[in-house]
Image (cartoon, helix red, strand yellow):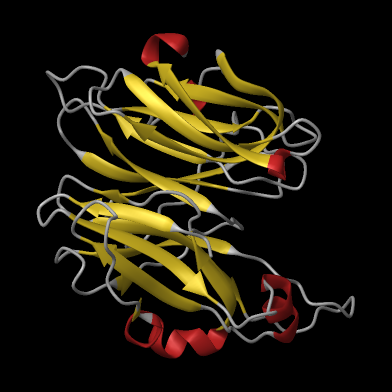
Length: 288
């Protein structure tokens, strides 16, 4: 469950990360019992998905002894990325184990983080958590007009606004999350998708797109937001494009290579957002 693909461009290898859990064991079961049963796994394809490798379980090698301190964790859902340094990034979140609160129930909080690889996916490492309660996340590389790179994290939250954080060390740790809250969260929260792209092929400088339900109380009216100065969280523009103006939830953005055309895979339906999966193409001019 929680598929998270990333393409390694040098070796032309498609990695599909996911977690496995025993049949009948839910995330809430693990949280209530303070006992992780999820496994960090991936498969690979060298022919764009026609054939796949056997499953590799990274849990012991990458998480190791820390697993005993986790109630559970998951990757994605949605895409991972490869940075211009060739580092691979897999977004994830973890529920640390907790003790009982004074109110006689467990105080469970989750935190976003990244798994990363610097050797084309042969070995993987675990980054530090974002220092604010956060959940399902996606990440994007921001490159400024001088060619400097930072990793951007956009995470689900229960606070009413998204959690945004930057990393100067490409996911090994994150700076204090931004206190500028222009991106509203929906109801009790919903996954969202973020994507960086260079609007002008003559420069590396990137903009950010973000896709998420725009309705503040329920999962509906999936919109696309644009930030032309993504190092400044206050520069997010109101969404000019509503991809689906009905019940809609989880989504994943992709660009079509030229910085001008994009695709979105999304949950959508007539009565509930989980009725079907939709696919939409749109242009940069639709969101400017």
